[in-house]
Amino acid sequence: DAGVIQSPRHEVTEMGQEVTLRCKPISGHNSLFWYRQTMMRGLELLIYFNNNVPIDDSGMPEDRFSAKMPNASFSTLKIQPSEPRDSAVYFCASRPGSGNTGELFFGEGSRLTVL
Amino acid sequence: AQSVTQLGSHVSVSEGALVLLRCNYSSSVPPYLFWYVQYPNQGLQLLLKYTSAATLVKGINGFEAEFKKSETSFHLTKPSAHMRDAAEYFCAVTRKGNKLVFGAGTILRVKS
Image (tube, rainbow over all chains, first blue to last red; front, side, top):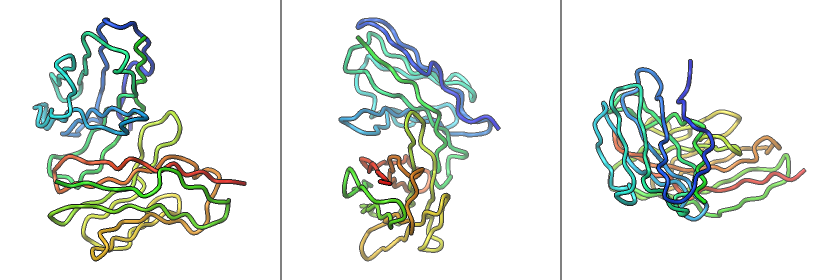
């Protein structure tokens, strides 16, 4: 079975540019999570969706960040405009069922570098 | 609110020695607890989880963890370290259906 698929795996961009990260969750999973990982802050939950509906976006750092889940098989995380402090690895994870015991399945991450 | 504290950002052991990675949790209700492992340039993988069944949980790659309510701990152990165990390990806590909160991580180094 295919796992969580993220693209791009690596992105290098210049400050001020728009960045779009993409995620395809595991088929049949009802919940999707976006995490950011940095050396300074560790793993931070940015936002999560249940059945394509955003449930908690309190971790989204600023209005420059937005996330969408138009259907059960696709989600995007957009940063506009990007800044050097946004450089991090962004992980998408999915989970089967909203009442599950919380096991998440992670993608391999998108490493973003903003110059 | 739930949280976990991992004691020690770096742990170094010799190959064949006992591995002990510490995790203490804070939760107002019975928690679900997890250990994840992250190898370089990869996403996180589940090692094991505690969901209020047996307090001693066995996971993959020879790891196990014991839930101790009296100590609010969920320490990860492995009797004999192998070079391939070198990675970063994350403890995490949630309540049923809620979001998963991760600890800061512990980097395990295995010396030959």
